[in-house]
Image (tube, rainbow, N blue to C red; front, top):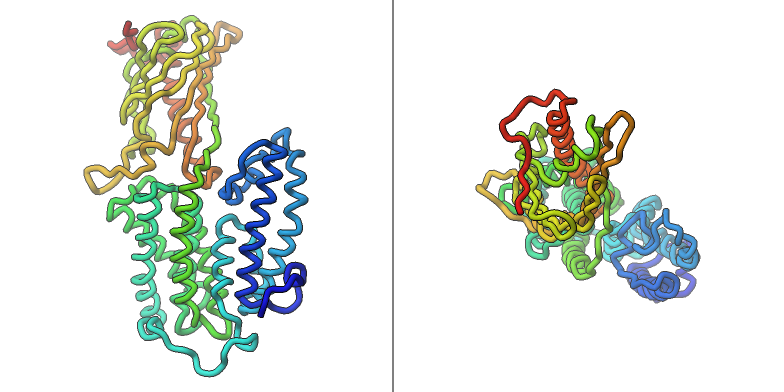
Length: 478
């Protein structure tokens, strides 16, 4: 069947994989170039392909809450014909393969839509839609995977886990890429391939497909720790999104293997996605997408005037050991602050459990405002691992503090509102998901410092009940 222009708007009938692949690739190229021109004209920016994977930020250029949102109207209008054609083509292709029409909703899920497109490109037509009828063809996987539910699950795990582990190693350790393809694409692939192979010999129930995918996800997590690719803390942080997407992938695999012809095409689908994922890893790594600058603010009220608080802001003595479980597990936490010199140009060193932050002073408005940049910083954590130490790439250059600020606001009654702000970037994607963790960690760091400053100042000023200690305050180093 040859591609026809009518394929782009008709919802009737079916479409073969050849024309579907042709129109999918053609429309993607056309849309990207049209959007690239519009973005250049309206925003004077360069549109990167990875921008389509970032929800909440229109094409990575116009923030939904920005005053420039109206400038995105041409982009929205230009996208409508492509959305129509994408839905029409995917709906007809899903119908041809025997998948439910509702699966077309995957068209709107970032990155997953690329794997969905690849799957529809390789799935043959269902029986009665042009596929050869008669005896089912036998393959190596048919002979390898038993019909029993337990045996099928066991062999599926033995096949899927090494492949997924190798893909995770390629993305994280070789390419140093902690992005959408790793945290969204790979768990979805794990769930989808587990369900497909589990249902290769005979259709399995939804519960059975999800069960195998869940076991595969848990075992993969253990393997990543066992072979020193990742530590326990990062695995626990990634677990919620990984489990949800693995179950999501298992559901899609269940839909494919429950067709009349069952999971006979599991091998070709899994093999195709194994080839697609490294390409996505490389494309994401090579895109050079810059993470957004994020901001975290925290504050406390100190029962002392700003003049008394200021000295403990610029430098403070050793903090007590942390009580927070996150810090005790290995996340970096502040120990003390020292400073060389006074005024703009002085260099502050905030020493953490993993090393010092080097913070040249940019604004010295004593006793109300202190601002500083960050020119060097230590690893973000010491991973919890059975080995003496591991060094996954994300510990060094993914969570980066860019600058910080202390504001001291006088309040009635001789009190001070002390506010700490950190501006930082996080190169782990999806950004909204990882920000849930990074914001909370930085907030806990803020509170550890701010509470220490509050207690120390109130002890010195005579308004608090801080227990006396021999070390009064961090010294100034000239």
